[in-house]
Image: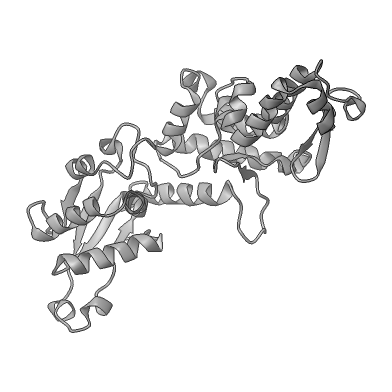
Length: 329
């Protein structure tokens, strides 16, 4: 019985691959990674009209994930999220796109006339990897001076954050608003919208006590058994990064839901996988005993009945480092 889990897995895999494209370059990269390691519209697609339907489709996919309360991995830059909320970006939003570029741009306002002239700027902007756009008519022949530097700074920010990629944003929004009306999200800030998309990023690692309270057990496991106690000891002892990998291994997202683990549907569960005694007691048990697996579509961890904590820890860490877990049952 699937219970909607296969659709959740499909949606998660689709979003993970579609927003960055395949690594082999066989599909276009619709989004690029900013210096802050967040996603923004790929400016090299600005003049490609035939690619706009792809953005519309991705807007619907992301809207469907939010509508179904399915957490996904992508982290978007705040200026992009502002545009999803129907808000205009300002100069200060540039720091959430490229902080170093923001600092260098705003420093122009305090430079002397001689320093500005020495840089040799004009009213045009390099965008993407191969395009130059004028900020005003005849921008390429209009030099930046002390008298017009304020205008230049604000025009650069506006071009970067509001004008470039506007066609792609509109296409994305049309798809997104097919499922999520604008009135539903306008009350949120960009930070809050990101938490709705991919969960709470404010906790280092995961909130282990809360996860422990929410966890269910099946297949003969219960909370008082030694193996379950070993399991929680291991989860508490591993690093925050490993805890997040564990959460992704089980639920497909490395961040916990905004409303806590009780918001996961279905509730997370540990299921016992019984192994033959001959396998567990063999001399090469460390090699022969299988790794834990998971069905991320059902938030289900399938944990073999290991005989000691050392074996459990070794196998669990090997499993979560592998980065895979989904299987049909």
